[in-house]
Amino acid sequence: MCMRSIATLGAAALACACSGSEQKTLQMADARVNALFNAPTGVSCIQLVATSPTRSTSKTFSVSPGQNTAALTLNAVPTGSVLFSGLAFDVPCGFVVPSSEPTWIADDITVQVSPGPPFSVQLNFHARTTATVGANFGGDAYTVTTIAGAGGNPGTADGIGAAARFAGPNSAALNADGTKLFVGDRNDGDAGALGMAIRQVDLATGTVSTIAGSLNALGTADGPGATARFSRLFSVVVSGGNLIIADRCAIRSMSLTRPST
Image (cartoon, rainbow, N blue to C red; front, side):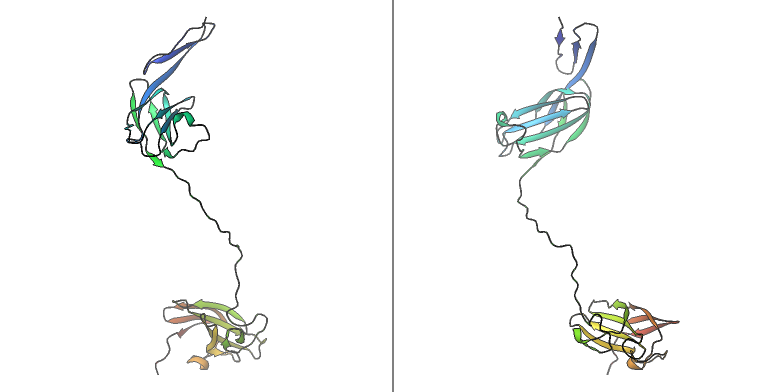
């Protein structure tokens, strides 16, 4: 006949094979778990679990609101690296089933357990609740809006919105406050005579105005506004109060500050 004895607190459990030729020693310990120091309203049952790579043990504790639960003792805890976890329920322990939703849950903690007298483990519990979350699925397509000009209709006219025309905008720069867009506009002959100009777009109103150069003439002349000429506009960038312009074989600078009258 096979004989089996389980040792008390902190001792080894000795199990014999029925043949009497083999025996195994299982090391166990007890843990004093500091769980909820005072059980809050809505907690009637606390479940503690200790899990090692080879086995686990669990126990439920019936509590009442306001009860001091600082000394919940979990027996037969496996030794070695042990993960301690805890759940709290708002129903009596007899009604807790695997599908029961806990009202409180503890942060898991891993402890190195050795056989011996009871040791203490602190579990920190947090209340859980349920939230109704609304969701709104927006389209992932970007919306395109024409601010000024008309696609496929080149021209040189200043104007507001669709009344304005661009000959061939190929570079742009935004001013510091995001209200004005400066456009390098190149007329390669599709909108009349050859020309290069700097155009300004007011992004609030869509108003387009030519502020330097000419869409009907080329050149290298410096000068104010319409007297300036550009040879081949490649790029523009705002730097402080100036517009820096890459113009074929030259770097040009144009002040963005209106002259005083």
